[in-house]
Length: 134
Image (cartoon, rainbow, N blue to C red; front, top):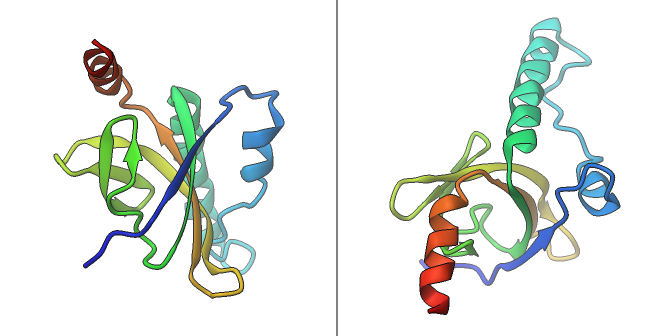
């Protein structure tokens, strides 16, 4: 299976900055308006993601067409292997961080994907970036 061509762009983590705030204006809908249990689940998930966003050191917007997993995309010298349940995993099995899916199977083609990755595992990447620069 061929990996998609993914555009990766870092965005500001500044809470007052407009770029990330605008991207996150879309909320996750798990059906909370119809079901009290789903509403509790939605709040629980959003609390976890909010905490992860606060702990994230850097954020990246990924845009591509095709499969909903941006397999092969590079984020801070980590190669994305899998995304599931809000967790981004690299090809070595390590956690890169969390994600929010902003668009799934959208656009004119019906294949456009957009997500924000909140990188929490940036220490290893910084070491790799410094080593590569030497």
